[in-house]
Length: 250
Image (cartoon, rainbow, N blue to C red; front, side, top):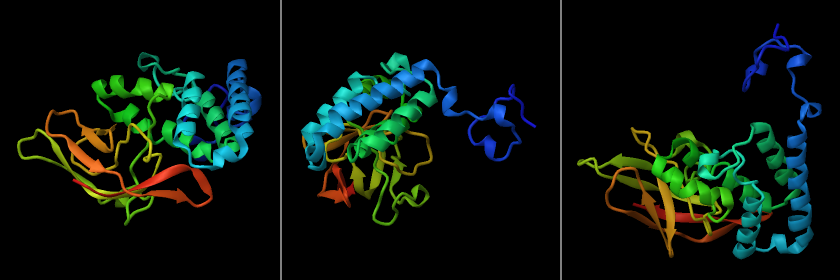
């Protein structure tokens, strides 16, 4: 039986015996965590929900402005280390802010949560030191917008069935990326976009926008990989975040 002195991590509560002392409840929030949640709720109520119909119209500039304000308040960099200009707070604080955005921010929550989650985390976890220094400060502040190229015509959110491949060249200087991506949330106005692809190494790619094209930066020096963005899509009733289709990339 787990006691109050036993630390239960992750999903261990599913398989470990534990008493009520090991269960975290809202009554256990610290004053700092409550303040962060309250600040997020006040921002969402005052800056997002108050805009009403404006939120439901595709407006990339409005989206960028709100993301920058979110960054200025620290909501975009809660999980990012301080050395990369993030807040480096605990996961409970991060979860509370995500909950506030998910509950009250309407369609804008899709933009914000994609940015802070799948748009930033792959880079934060697997990027090179140069990539971390180059992109994380901007993603934390909201001056850069993140997205994540996962969905493909043959595979929705099923990452294990992704057909996009990253093949190391014979001389070992660069990777050749082949595949198709579609319905990529935020891609229509994102600045940073790591695509999911299969390779035999743990290489982290970073895509950055150059005018109307995207360029891929890999850890090894080599030729630049470019793609063009396809047609924008509106995702069902969620009309804020524009999802984009990439016909091909190579």
